[in-house]
Length: 409
Image (cartoon, rainbow, N blue to C red):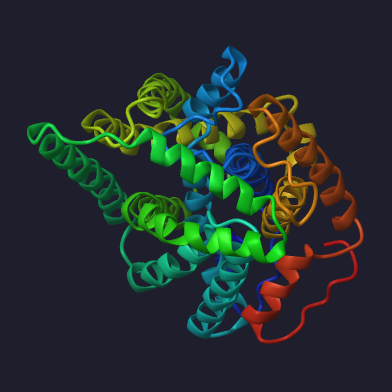
């Protein structure tokens, strides 16, 4: 998950530097990305068939298909990249914070990664196997190893990593087409989905066993797909942080406009290919080709989203949007874990056990209602506390001491 940024670098000597103001644009971007992540995660928690290549047989209406298709085009594989970019950007802010405090950065960051990894394991086992925290913790160590690279080198490395990943999928697609192989056993997958649904509707032990059974597939997906793209986004965020690009986005208005034009045009086109291949073409060469397309186009759509948010924040309604989104962004870790907890209570045997019983449209409305509540709760909580609960716990581990929790920051 993303980590709350500590401070923006300054030119004042560390021992005398005062803590600068938070970058509200980063917090607002996180809040926006948090909503997108929720819209994707709810589809996996509401149906055991999501991601299997077979649509949930209980919901096959035109509306159900349209909701799934829209989520796949505009949300899937996009918002975790935005989170990853912000993780890389925040890394530079954490470096500056340690320097300003006169502290050694390495043990701080290692403790932070250890805390994220532990949280991620518990999250994946108990609530949602599609956890991203463990991946971020491991990739954070790699980022630490290469963080001294120049911004232009980080940019080139990120582009190369996206391109290499896409090329590997193209090779796999070619090999599969050449052997005339591919496809899935629809009947077998449907039966597996039915069994998984029953397990998730059972008691707590049954839910945990169901999560454990999903782990191998999730690990494969993370290693082969999400991790390379996430680390490339880390590098982009690292480069942007070193250049201080989000300190004053108004200086980059023309660039943001070009990113919107290019990102929405190419990104949406790639999303359409990705969504089309997800229905009826699982395990085929076409789906692998769509994966290659998605690897290079999803980052463009994620960038277009970010550029749109930043331009809106700089516009006449920017203050209202910041006031709405930034508190949730300051409590990203708390809200991310809370989303999984609430959805687990709604969809699994921990609570109402509505998995497989709520249509895609109602699942999406549930996610939006939950996010609206989180916006209000985050604003209320931060009016009385310096950090979100999970942020405070992670900060305690990171600093090896308990920071003050009470009192608005």
